[in-house]
Image (cartoon, rainbow, N blue to C red; front, side, top):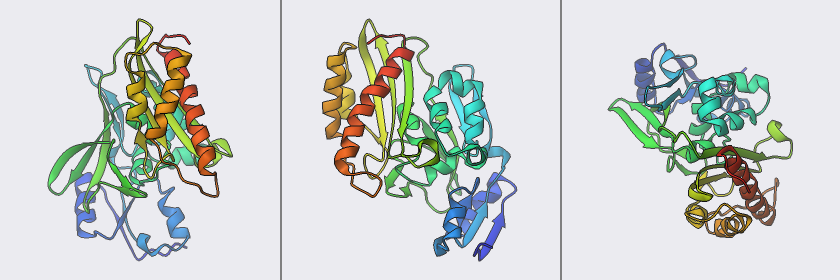
Length: 291
């Protein structure tokens, strides 16, 4: 049995917003793969629950006529992996989803829960960052949109207030040619463990040079981060091994990993530089470039 003091089941998004606002101490539960662990460990901060599992307003993956993509926050990782829109236009997100735990967890865990949990190790955070995703958030005051970049405010903390519910992720239209993306996760037990380091890259290659590079890491800082120094090192530079080395060196100004029982800081820095080159190579190949 779980030590739950109050439980409220929402049957609509509006009711969920009202319940969350009226019970500011309550935690939202959708897939439950994080919340139930906290309840199992008798964390008294999780004794009040508002259940938003299965709300229609939080489901679905759609693409509009211009090419912009909307993914409901209640979408499971299995749905991300199997959806043809995600496979074609957001392959790094599909790859990140496939790197999470086993089939049972992927069938239950939700995209929104993974991001709103606030963990720097969230596997879906790095592709969300490199695809410039924006979160749609509904509250008693209305609807607002906030970039995923900056949404994580500290370890286990995100920019949500009582009554806020993350409804969907929005992805801008991606260029049709010359772009590629990739995701890579290093963990001691692969998908069955949280990331020691997670990484995603997106690039736009034109005439043998980087027109743009986006690079993001998880577990390389207290929150998932983009890497502006590394990205600047690539801007306009030829797609070459020398450029990859320059990116790898510039990257050290963007990250601040710590030592833990999983890995020492020096090992994490080695992983970060090695993984950056690996994931960028993959993204370049997907963009139609060569190294």
